[in-house]
Image (cartoon, one colour):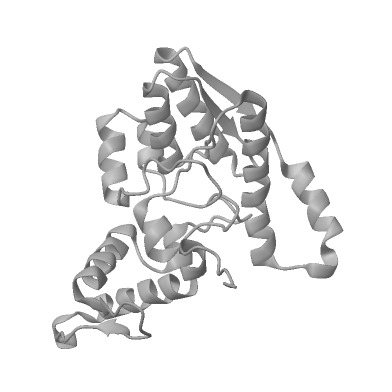
Length: 241
């Protein structure tokens, strides 16, 4: 089961799944979605079906279900909470289908989202069984997508999580591009220390003056997202006896 959004990550994952020769269920789940997103996703699945007879298409418009949920939860109204609820409704849908077909839910997160800035919904699109591109940077995702011939309309579309009613994209929300975030991930990996079993971590000695103003800003953005979203990337705390 692959949730297909019309974006580059889900397009790549669904293509890789189709190439296994195993039954691949592509699921479109719009919730107040921009028509262009749904159209790109639909075009992509139809492109896959030309060469892969075991690719199936499922379309579930979850807008009415979501709106009912919003109406029910007005006493706990939170814009961010409702945005994440969209992702969790899609996760529930994918697992309902996976249980029905004895299948797996396949994740579409990349390395920057999953292990860098934590740009996904806990128990939403982060709730998956396998994650085939989670060790690929966004740059590598684009490279592989082009190599596999994925539709140009998907490759040129600005990345977006599709959780909002407006046109905001990933860069609008994060404040940095994916190549910038990849640079920050590499910089932190090369210049960060952490002492096992101790509350001691931070940057090794480096000359901050060698960084441009933009690089310092991107580094701050990356660390802010990474630190506040660590709870998504680590196992839940367990109180030992």
